[in-house]
Image 1 (spheres, rainbow, N blue to C red):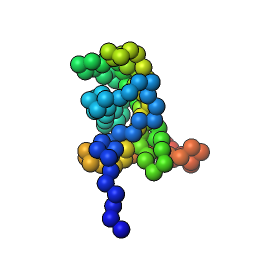
Image 2: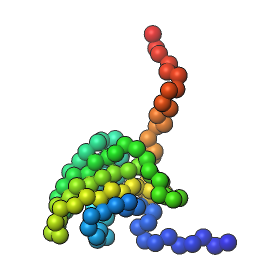
Image 3: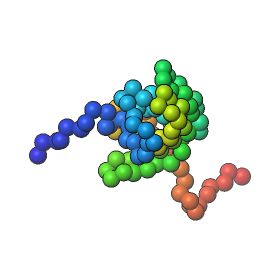
Image 4: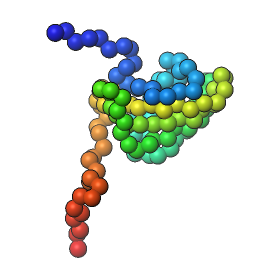
Length: 117
């Protein structure tokens, strides 16, 4: 069975919620800001472009939407169309395509801890 072609950009970002329509250039700006935060393991960072200013927050957890899963982010933005919020995730496939390694696994809640003393 042949693989079905994915829509352009679908391997990079998946929008979970937006209070206004996202143009491709704004989606690309949000993607780059999120990748930067994810790579540096930082919680909050500014986002700016020709028609947008605001901040992106790394929620530091993964979300899934059907078969699409990845790290979650939230952006609070001021645009020419007004202020708004966007919740989205970076797809694991998109991160792999960009050569971004996943973060090291964290210990499960309640897992036995090893002490070095």
